[in-house]
Image (tube, rainbow, N blue to C red; front, side, top):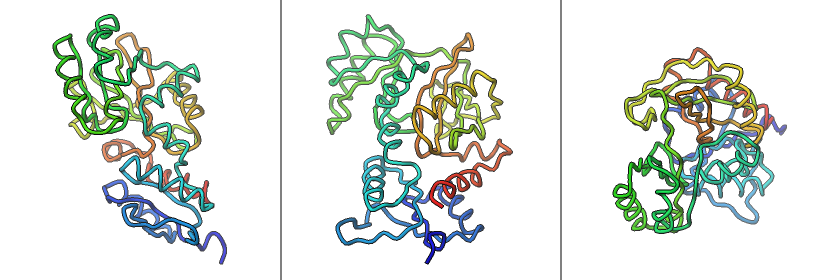
Length: 283
């Protein structure tokens, strides 16, 4: 049996719109695949994972990272790689990687406990944004407009279970023009970008942000290309903020990008391009 005859593994535990679209595209191309539920798959010595490669769409960061590393250990090429997941699954690690590459990131500070942040926030400056290092959709992200708000939010964060929730990652609040940019970069190429517009400071489409087409200018394209070079060769959703002066800042990089809003407004075939990239890396 040739490599091309082997099935593609698709790692997922929840089948959302994006996964349905990707699986339908694989079916349309008659690419055999096996759906691996990361909650029940067994890994270990003697387990022979015979796949042409793997596409990971696992929503849980820890399971995603472990499953990907285990498959890579078994000799399976996974898109995205565990190196990309390790960086992009943590917002602070992403910032460190981008800053080390000399890319414009939002001014930030971090403490390893919530109580460590409170005394220095006044010097850092309000308003500020505190967000969990692991998570998505803007959940548990809070805007801090002053000491009282910061004290209440950080007290709440200190009560959350798990040591990772104690890591306190703070960014300067960027006064943006009511929108953020989400760009889809695959193999270093920007294949599409949208604005997410909202009257609320969090513009996630999951929170009601309205998508519209963004046509990147040369500066934005260069920034997106440089960001992908810093993060690694994969399928990336890159979030960019622009301030009132038009300056760009890389905010976050998503390693399992959603595109339900983008599909409504972009003419490019994001799903097809996604599958093209995966097959080019594992084929």
